[in-house]
Image (cartoon, rainbow, N blue to C red):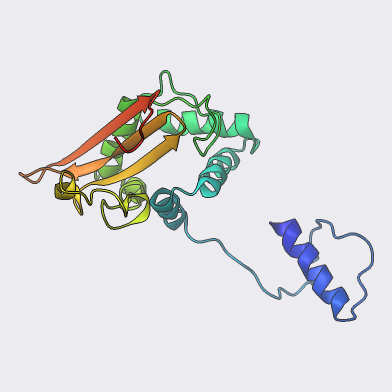
Length: 203
């Protein structure tokens, strides 16, 4: 992104008659340089919420790479997998059998268990980990938002509208749903359903 911004800036200068010499490259500004502008990311919490609500694979991949960078590791697939596993392990989550080949979940080598997903949701709901709250608040609301906006609308499922919050996971032949629901007596419950070799994703 920084290189793209610099290239665009050089192009705009050239289009307006300002001579740009040499290739645009990364460098460290001197202490005499004056900052003209800066652009900052949305907070991490907002990125997590957006990624979950809209099932944004690009943000998911970027978050995995940022997890690697935050740990001082290389921001490649291997570094992201290693540091994601370590971060989940530090939270005491069950990562046995899990594989994080990428951050988006699009790689068919990815593997997670229902236990890992429900444990993460339960941990996010616990008062000991307020930093994980966006994991819950980012979940789409059945019948209202994100990837669940058009679901839970039929007569058999309408009772879940506005009550179920969940993240979908879909590949050809793979359909998953993990999230939370409030029971009739007011308890917050976490659930996770994972199905492979499916032929009817709606069912």
